[in-house]
Image (cartoon, rainbow, N blue to C red):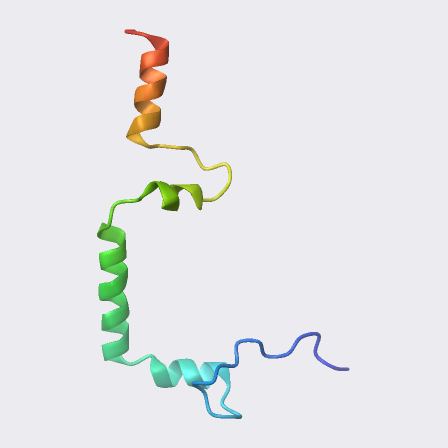
Length: 78
């Protein structure tokens, strides 16, 4: 029986015949992990822009200050 799909994760950066798990083991060095952690830390420190807010998961609440102010003003001084 043939597999339903081919290895779509194959990249030009891997030599032919190298499995994805072997590639991950080879690339998962201390230096690469440190660089990844620094990049993620920098990304998390950046404020969320309106464009990023629009790409959030459907059904997630809009917790922006603008939306809060809009609701507060519409309800009056309670």
